[in-house]
Length: 482
Image 1: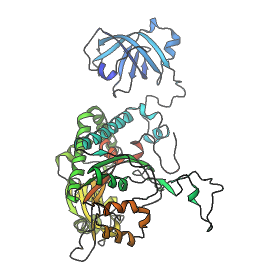
Image 2 (image 1 turned 180 degrees about the vertical axis):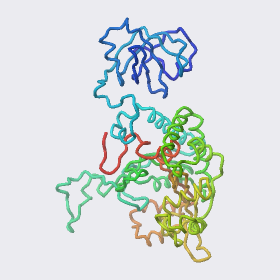
Image 3 (image 1 turned 60 degrees about the vertical axis):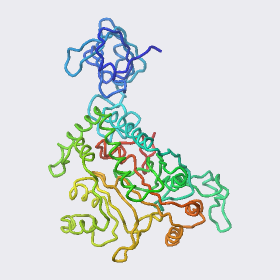
Image 4 (image 1 turned 180 degrees about the horizontal axis):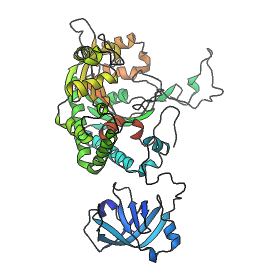
């Protein structure tokens, strides 16, 4: 195939009068003369100028929005506004036709709802070009951050027999015949005849397996797909999403908080440094959206200001107990403006409470620690009871503006007797997690870790408002298209 140049490189080039070849998709074609061409290497198009007098009519008719073409010609200085270079084409070849009557992405503004229906084509828009370039940069930054700190990348299983969180429905994995499954003498489905000889599910977390590896390598992280069969249609939930879960030995809650804060600042800075064009576009897009909203619903900070703000401020650290005191006496609680009123210690904080702490009270990211044991998972390290005899655990949640909870983690319970006691209280069968308990029997050590929902991170950094717009092919109730 002919060697082609990327539009991203040509737009910076000053090698005028050299012959170049570009290949891409037509965004617009004006006056039978000016082609706006994009090859995905950047958001900007390059203008290809053709001499329609020297091209057959049949070819000109095939240069339509969405068509893939190859153009060869001289790179010249542009006299038009908005670009520094253009290509004066000597030849044009159609690589792939696009019927203008049927191609759904015409050169006009499309709603995000409409674009979700054509998720296989929405990558070709500027908005999704920007979103997925930022997503790529954040994923790369995650790996770079942990690699620089000596963490081992661990692939934990997608198919598992354990429910790490003990939360919500899981997707079952089976090869049994739904119409005629084998039954036990008690009439229950006999999973001993299934592929894995036991009931299995798609994972909700790689944490428990990650802990096993941390007890050997010291520091590991996972970055993989996780699944929740939760019948939720909110703008913040998906049935399939990606999680980053570091686990590291010889660490306590303080170490955990510091690692999480350092990671967040690192990846946000990486995106700001490496996605300038994309973030500038998304910043302007958000500003335009804000203009359509009532004054009291508009963001106080622009997207870029919000990202810079997270880098400039140390995250506020406070206990759950302190947060409850602030929320109980807050104006929205006193005036009964919260949907879920805070009236007593032990309440599970909702997104509205988390966002109040971040956006109104402290006006910076917040790390909440030491939650009541009753609202947290079995594996979290138990603190000594407080002055009022209340049992808390060494948990932490990191709260971000516009999102609420971004990260959830804890120091893990390394003491075998305490862990068994907690499992018994919650009726978690020890025989199912014998391998997990073994890490407490053989060389146990203090350790900690957390989970970051990757899509929530992308949501925050891009300023998008629906989580279905930051993953390529969203999976949610009643939808598994593409």
